[in-house]
Length: 379
Image (cartoon, rainbow, N blue to C red):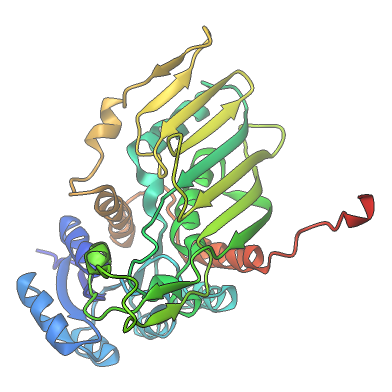
């Protein structure tokens, strides 16, 4: 009987544990976990029945010789760990962002191609069932030629979430890295992967956040918000990343004669009035998906000029992995694709480090914020 594939996980928090469960779901043997803090990685590995734990990444690669590595740390810790893994001949699954800047991300994509290893880039909300449904409807001509798409979200995040990696560009923080990547992935999955042009602006509406000890699991960080933010003894960290962005893009689509125009608008700290949504407008119809990451339900604008809620086809429902939440299910979907590809089975195209590097280079350009045209002479 053929031995199962093996995976080594880097990261012990929400993502690390989620990746481990996702690989197990795909039939992969989770043989080890590496983290920064010995007591934490030992505890998590024991709780998850992972046989090996440690703090030395290179040592773990050498001792365990995994088939796959899974990178579940903040983006600032990705580059060298991924280089080490590729040099060791491992296939790599990496959460987003791939790295903290375009040049380093491009270097990883080129190295993976050179070494012939398979990679997957987890901007994975394209696997939401209503996104898959929308892609099918657009391909079937349900709305005619796709013309415009709008992606609107306002998260109204608590301004006093403890200072951490999400506040720092050097650690892979910011809303472009951790929100826009998913939105762009959703849009390209529906209308086409070829991005023709892009411009945008970013804004840091936060500026600072309280420094609090003890935060380990990203998902539980709200539990550590200080009860008294006016405490004079409280220390503060300075944010250096965007919390809001507006981006315009043009995407080539085989389903349309002209490029599809896309608006991405996100306010990380702003309250919403209308529902967050993704809408695809076509030449004779439209698709509305409720939710910032298109969680559903989906509505189709029909020939009678009515928005009609459209249920998911049964085959899409049946193909969805099990999981506690959307993030976990989407990890499982993409990891299942990667594992099947590694085994030599036929799979649909999925996002690799090629897209991860492209996204990081686009984020660099958006952050430059230099697309404005001075019109003061027209006043």
